[in-house]
Image 1: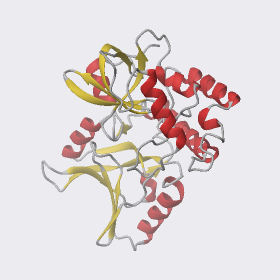
Image 2 (image 1 turned 90 degrees about the vertical axis):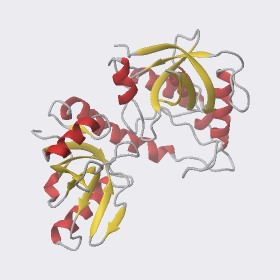
Image 3 (image 1 turned 60 degrees about the vertical axis):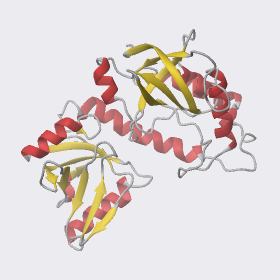
Image 4 (image 1 turned 120 degrees about the vertical axis):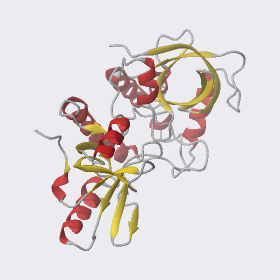
Amino acid sequence: MKGTVIKNIPLKKVVDGDTIKVLLNNEEESLRFTCLDTEESQRGGNKPVTQAGLLASKWTKQYFGADEQGIPSGDVRVDLEFDTDDPVEVCLNKHRDNYGRLLCYVYKAGEPENSNIRIVREGWSPYFVKYGRSRLYHHQFMEAEVEAQAQGRAIWNPATNAGGPSRDYSTLIPWWHLRDSVVQDYRYLGIQAGVLSVRLDYGHLLDAARAGNTVTLFCDLQAGINQWTGNGAVIYAGSKFQKFNLWIPDRDSEAAQTILQLIETRYANSGRGYVYVSGVVSLYPPSAEGKPQIVLTDVRQLADVPPGE
């Protein structure tokens, strides 16, 4: 299987080890290399800047012929490949992360192997499956990561970050693979069962909310409880671009306490994250500007498996 490809795209800037900016349809788009998570090279997030992150950023800039500020020397072009073979317009909507960045495999002109796999092989990123494995290149990514680890390259060499902050991959990677196993169940069982994804099926979710339909949604509760309002709890189970909330009323009730306990111990923080949520979806506030939400009143509305399994 090959994914949908867009060829000959102007590269505008290399931001860091796993993010670039390109000119697409006459607009500048931020693009995240799918299945990569290089360490940080810029402050501002909740992860520390590391030496490996600084070096990964330098390596990617040099690889694409960019200067220290990430600006390419001359007219540098890249090819983009998405992880499915949907039409281009579908891919441009479907393959985006929670920050609105496109998720792609990136090919440097003249290179047969995509840069994502090359960066893993060079040891600048683990094979990042927190949001699901590669549909197209899973085995190649695994082989590249094995090679980098066997050779002790970059992040797999303790000397790279010696004396400074680093990431605990011995904890992170098993957790990512747990989440990936849940995503795999969704891809092969949940979609067939008619489960909607908050991110991928947001238009259908809005239609269901306007009609007051009962649905089952696949969403991520890693962040846990986000806000206490009055006597209830709010969970932001969508993203900046696909807003969707879960509302737990009357938090002192036995039913609410059971739901909260399950979310905090099984799904939030370093838990499974992903869950199937069933219930009537509505708009809140109930107007054209409202956002879709489901009210949780019974712990049986949360499940690890799709309906019918």
